[in-house]
Amino acid sequence: MKLGMEFLTDFWKEKYLQEYIKNGGSKIKFVTGRRQSGKTYFLKIMSELARQERYKVVQFSAKEIWMHDFKEIYAEIFRQCKIMECLEGASRRLIHEMGFAYEDIPPGMKFMDFLSQNGMGDVLTRREIRFQLRKIFLDNPLLDNNFALACSMLTGSILGYPTLEEQNRDMLLGWLEGDRSIKLSQLRALDFYPSRITKYNARHMLRSLAELVHMGGYSGLFIAIDDLEILISRSSLELLHYTKMKREDTYESIRQLIDDIDSMKNLMIVYAFDRELVDNENAGLKSYQALWMRIQNEIIGERFNRFTDLVDLDRLAAQEYTPDIIVSISESLARQKETVSAAALDLETAKEIAARAQTAAVGIPGLIQEAMQEGKEYV
Image 1: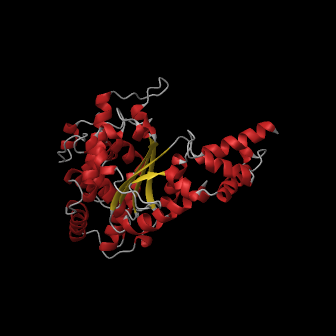
Image 2: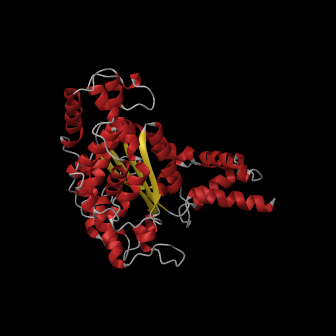
Image 3: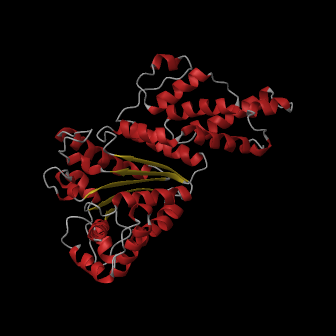
């Protein structure tokens, strides 16, 4: 299926991952289509491309994380970001700013121990470390002040100065993740007076997290959220069930994120969902005009617009999945282990699929797999 998607994935790689996002931009995209149109596969391809371009990649399903409370979304993103890796990168930056090479420090040795071993662990050097920590974190306007202070202390623990006990380090990490079991009174013992992370300030924390990821030496933060159609699902098999209030809270949360995205840097977020979320007039995106007005495609041309923020994979498939491409996709699927006994489709069948795709309930990738399965059963 990648054959037909390269028209868009290669474009996103060049224009967004390699240029716009990497150079400090931020973007939110929405990907939709009929069932089995390749939405999840599209996210998988883009996530892999983002990793290749040295992005921190976060992937999760809306079926597993509550979407109406942005604090829950932020917490999941934070967990997957592995913040200590980012802080390690920030510590290397500080070491460089002080005129040292990180590679010269023996493995397992803290920077402060290295300085002391070489007769440079004096008061002036310690003061310089504190100055650099303040410059890198507390003087950065993109970082929330409490977020910056916590990162400064955690980076100090990596450097070996200022020292931080393991218990206090775990408390700081817990607060950054939004763990409500962390008592704020315990943090005050560290001369740290933060407020709790809530759905109201979680977007600012995400902005701080994206900035920290970039400071850690990564190109940026790429977030892929799948299965957003759960918002209108009535299946009793789903773990999460949305009331009208929770659904509208989710729409409002996304609306606020769109309005705030220009204040963030090096961040790309992609939401994916079945077409039903668009077509459902009563409960879908169109039911919340404040959001729909921000994401709808006002001008639709004859050719697929690769810059569009609301991506229709069915429309992309209609343009790019020619009968020859459909045959090539089936050949690729046939070579996979799980479909080893399935024969590739011939050109006539591919033409029939291209024609059926205009009115079918599933996308072209789904039609290809159905046709191959039918051929296998027939054999």
